Amino acid sequence: MLSYAELYRKGMERIEQAGAEHLLDLGAETRSQNRMNREFMESLAFEMRFLGSHYASAKTTLLGREVAHPIQLAALCPGRLLNAISGYWEEPYMESFAEGLKDAGSWFWAGRVAETELQRFIRIGVPVVRIVKPAYSEGWDETDMIIRQLKEAEDRGCIAVGMDIDVFFGEKSGDEPPERYSLGPQTMDQMHRYVEATQLPFIVKGVLSVHDALKSKEIGAKAVVVSHHGGECIDYALPILRILPHIRKAVPDMTIFAETGFQRGTDILKALALGADGVCLLTILMIAYAGYGRQGVTDMVRVLADELERNMAICGCRSIGELDSSIVWHPYPDSTKGE
Image 1 (tube, rainbow, N blue to C red):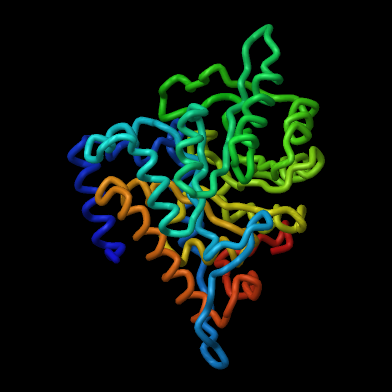
Image 2: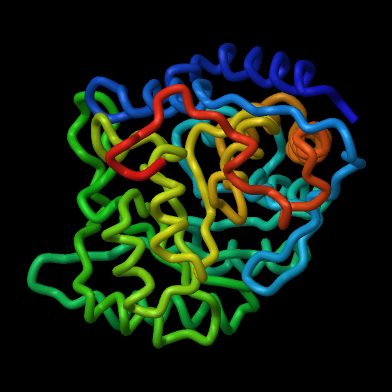
């Protein structure tokens, strides 16, 4: 298995050769949110608990399914960075990404992809989560079309479905005009219909407030992804780990995934200790993929899972179920929110 340093170094070399390093941070306007997110994540510290500790296992259950670890892929679809590095690998490159995740015991979260592509991922044998976009056309009701996509995903064998709500008003990079793709806001009635349209667990992706977490529960969603779309949603968005404990408290019975900015096993451990059930990664897996293709994806997930288990043990936690916020120290307690 390649080391983190080897995976990162080779991947960054190829991304730089492709002239694509600027695509690693596409935050809106000032790009403040990714910087703020990382700074807050790095401000959190662990206490160590060696006496009475033992080797740890990251095995857990997500949406009723047993998994070897809680490390997931953030929803993937063809985009500028993936297209820039795909030339190093034979097509169909997204399938090799899926194969790497299967080898690592993770799931493939699919974003905007064709139904035929979706079926190819499923045939590989990797569990597939389908995240649909909030289609919107002025003067036209796209509800039935979205429902067809959800039903199609269920019929083809996906294990869960969901929607990106953080792209209701488009994605934005710097001072570029927002990329809308004919997207737009969905009403609560529409969202409820989407949840009711499938027997699969429904995931609301892009939740960054207790407000949206409670609304997600209200419509019957089984899970939320705490995320601000990699910084492409709004400037000065709350750091993921800042809001996460409040969302956990508000919806204790929902499955919560955390996404955006996670790079190492310690980052993942912080999220799990603060209330996440699973953690979704994309940029660091894209870097590993750029360097070593399918094997890079597999090895990066395995490296991070090994880091997670070692750090769990150091903090005195033998299992995911033993993790809680007491192992994490905040430098700046939030007295107004009860932290």
